[in-house]
Length: 282
Image (cartoon, rainbow, N blue to C red; front, side):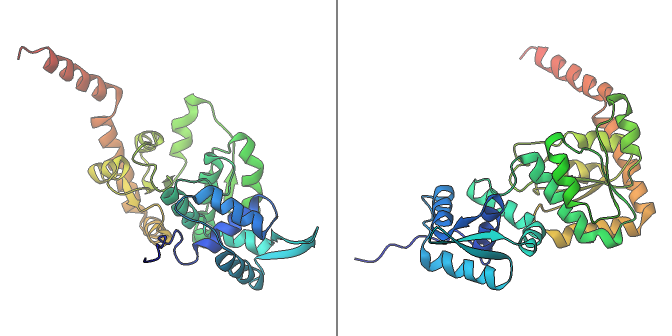
């Protein structure tokens, strides 16, 4: 009888990344790590010493984690270099989460999104004059401040009164709308409408073929790239920063589209037409 094989759960380098994410939560020994892998990825994957321990050794050799003997077992913890490596690959971690339907790393969706935002800002920081993160969310604020401590051009603020939202949005040159892979088919970042209404261009990192890319293409109000494509994100941001007139034109086009298609008057008119259509004899 032929031996049954299980399709590979992890692509190249992803097991190492998942181990870093698990160890960020707390130090663990090898069998604890295998137990967590089995809990998260079963039944499609079963961890084995033959795959997990070589990955641990490789991470230790790269100074990404360190081991210490405790109670007769070797317990592993993340190093500072390991934390930095994880932060640089948050977009890859998000892809694993979306593909497997699991949650790794950060303790909340909001904090995870902000982690990814800060990681992306860090990647392009030398080319930015100023990046402003305005929604420092409650419990995540301390973590965000820690992540951005060494970035001179990231400014953290707090909530503003709703009547000043349009003013706040208008202070930005470019607005980033990031959404983790797989969520754009069930979630619509409504702030996109407010950004377009403020006359500012949008750079969206989001699933293709969903509502935000459609709106940006129809309105000309910005650019959309894939949620896990750091290079495309960097290139799109560089292009917007390099051509202020083009970015300004996108902002103006986006505002014209909102006024025509998504303002309260436009929505009311659309509903009026729908009600009239439904009331016609058939």
